[in-house]
Length: 413
Image 1: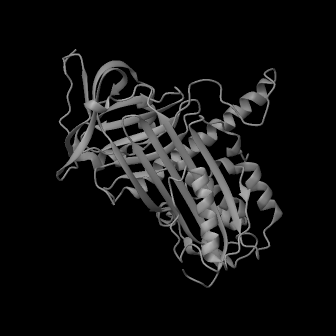
Image 2: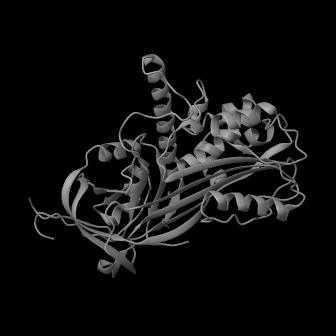
Image 3: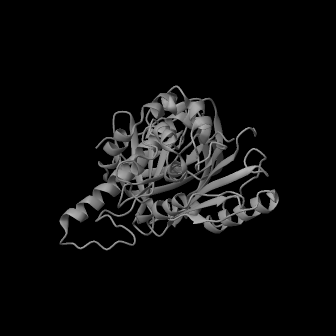
């Protein structure tokens, strides 16, 4: 076996995916008689279809927000999809038809609605949803029931005239569900006295590596961003690891302690063409790689990294929409049975910390609506030195659901 080594210029993390161990897919709160094969198969098919829909949306969304962005990125596809799914439930038929034009956004709510609240995740991952209507809003009971049915959402009325109190209450909720990893920074455009409703989602993941990195082996090295190099602490480890490669990239899967989650890192072989690589890396590319891992001796070098980012989801969705009538969709569709309620902002904050012991990731998505009219190195070792931009995914192994997608380029906001 010949020595395989990459001359790398930058490292990019495109995605994090959390995976659960292979096995039967589980549905929370629903006992299915094994003898009823049809019911079992239908449940599995519905869950698998929902997971695939969210994963496909994640790749579409990643491609959109990275077109003109070379900085680090991290986001949760299921976090954004859950928030948009709850909004979908509040729209009239006109609004729903427009949302259906956004590929894969909430496919699981169309013909045979599937409850994301019934998905079973690794204990290392948690997700929470809440709807915050104004105390003055006459909210339809069906919307409340459906948000609970499909997303296990809490309904928490707020007095938005007490703006600071409303923000404080939402911040407390976010902190409770993200181990205080994210704090919502209030801006007038998000929440003020005219807010009629807010819809929120949080995700949180924390787990130790199955085989941790030796801190004494972490050394200051060079990370190549494509244009220059920066000083970067690099973790080092040698051993048998899940490894694969294609003509264009190398990939490694690093399991976490529970054995139910893993981080998959995709490292392009030609670091000078990272932008082309990431824009052409598809869900099919990911499936091909994730299904071809095998144990190989690997000389691994991986940076420690910690960053956060904020994403304007509303602008990204507008770019993905690619149909006429987007503004009419916002202004003429009824939201919560009233055209005076208009969605004004959708934002996504996310945070990730990767070090020698493990990983911690959190995300927060918020959608707000306001009253219409107001704006607001031996030869046998595979050399995997992630010293230039790479993609990473944290995935649920059992369901294949991609919980987080991001990239690390060494370029901070």
